[in-house]
Image (cartoon, rainbow, N blue to C red; front, side, top):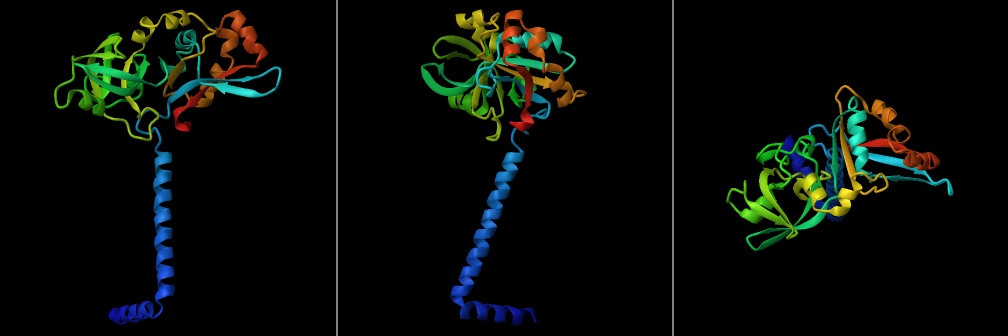
Length: 273
């Protein structure tokens, strides 16, 4: 009986070629669209999930209201002293507080070979916070101010099959560093996927006079602060806890300005990036 149905079906397909082509083509296109949309949705929903504690990681941001125009504006750039104030005064909320310079392109030099890669100068707790999967070295690999950790593809591009550990590199023909770790490439749907290397925040500070000056300057808002909340604390508690940060933790002149601008501090969770 099944064979009979197949014969009848094939006969109808052949008899109505145009109608059959339209129906089959439409079905194929529809299925392809559904598959593509499903892949896109899965990619969006899995964004940053590579990081084990992605639901506890966030970036410090602020929101202010212009007293002259009434317009609200936010920023992810903060002053360096804020990190230490958060680290000291909000230890009940956060496990980790990490300062970083923005991701930018640099040139890595090794034995006359130059390779351009995106990199980020960041504090030593970053590999653990981001749960980098270390192929060589450990999460403490950025403890030395003159260290650097490379992504797997960056390490292979520079050293081939040779062991990169303890090899010396120069960043922008200016900063001498030693390779102390290699981490698995981050997936494309991670904020840090483009980063080919991480280098110590302390090295960035020591090699830039303006950053040294900014270390005590609340007016220079050029830096990123990443945080990881404690597992027993939820985001609403965190947000309520740091909302009035400027009024209680910043110098009086900064507090006055922030009061005028109705500035509030908050954490933008990685799960919402």
